[in-house]
Image (cartoon, rainbow, N blue to C red; front, top):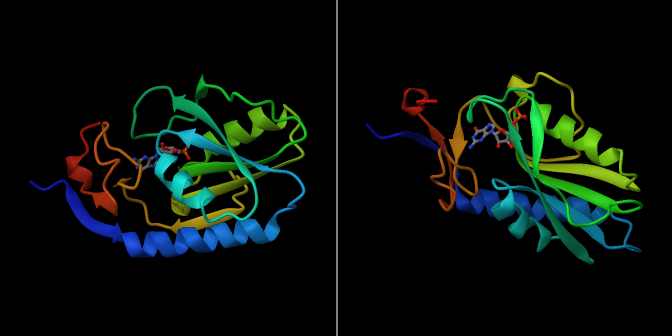
Length: 179
Ligand code: 5GP
């Protein structure tokens, strides 16, 4: 059985939207200080690599990894830091770059954690938003695409480590998901 149900987003559509997001971020920027783009590992890496090249003005990069306890494909709302930032974000303008917002627990945890460190501003840019699945209300400043409730892979997103390098975003068949 083919695990892929359908192609949700083709590479041209992704590239066009990422360019628009870069323009939106650039238009809102205070160009006096470099923006610190905080990429959430590992799913947002490919999105972030494309996005930062569409943002005008200096952008610095940092990375953070978080994990939910329990099942990999069902968010538990119990988030922990696996890899912390290298930079001190006090007084910085931070852009959190996330692959997908689902229940919202991960972004809520990240915003709470990072706000305690005193950034000047913190905004969220998510490529994908499964708005129907939201359990906690979180502000998302820039959204690439609102998508239906399906498990998606490709363009950095994985299923059990696979599909990250696929250039399109694919929806998997629910019956193909074993965990
Ligand atoms: P949340 O905490 O908002 O429920 O979940 C966010 C995280 O769950 C995302 O960063 C991503 O790692 C994972 N996730 C949620 N939905 C999907 C999906 O459809 N595909 C993949 N590959 N990961 C997902």
